[in-house]
Amino acid sequence: MLFDALPRDNTQVTPGVVHLPNWLPLEQQARIVGQLRDVARELVGTPLEMRRPQLKSGQMQVFMLHLGRMWATNPYRYVTSLGGHTVPPIPDNLVELATSALASAALYDESLARSAASFSPDMALVNYYPPGATMGLHQDLNEASPAPIVSLSIGDEALFRIGSTENRNKPWDDVTLASGDVIVFGGPKRLAFHGVPKTRPGTLPEGCGLAEGRINVTFRQVEVG
Ligand SMILES: O=C(O)CCC(=O)C(=O)O
Image (tube, rainbow, N blue to C red):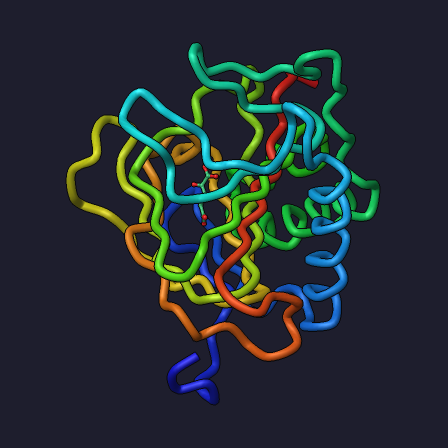
């Protein structure tokens, strides 16, 4: 990252949103990338294969891999199997990681603290951003549970934008997410429009497990606990 030496502190970006920079050490990032790559390989040739979803608005730039549940399009909904193939579970180590990240974020935000003890992620969406790929502003609306979203970034830096729950208009909060960063959004921002208007190719650290691009994993709780 530019100005690497500058400290980046854990921050409550706005009520409901907490940024935890450098939360996951590099070796663990690489291990998780390897673990996710193995899952993706096993699904090649099945309907659950990692691919760029086709939305009403066009084809997404990111490739998606689904754990626990699959976010299916047309109509948008979660399913546990597709074409006779069961969606692979979220590995236990990743569930623990998400729970622990929320506990860390809860120290900085009251609304997150209220949901931390009961958080039970049952879906993880793995997005692979090829160099320079972006994701438009959207809401995560398909989960019945109001639990927060825990988001882990590995690879290229990204500009994460989060706005209001009403529309895509300003004001927004913009946060640069680097490899190993976590951002959590819940409480008053759980249904906020958010997206990634920019990624910065070639900014990934050596040893994170990726040769290029960016992975983002959002841990979600779909079912009410
Ligand atoms: O890539 C990111 O940081 C955000 C991903 C996201 O918004 C989503 O998966 O809904």
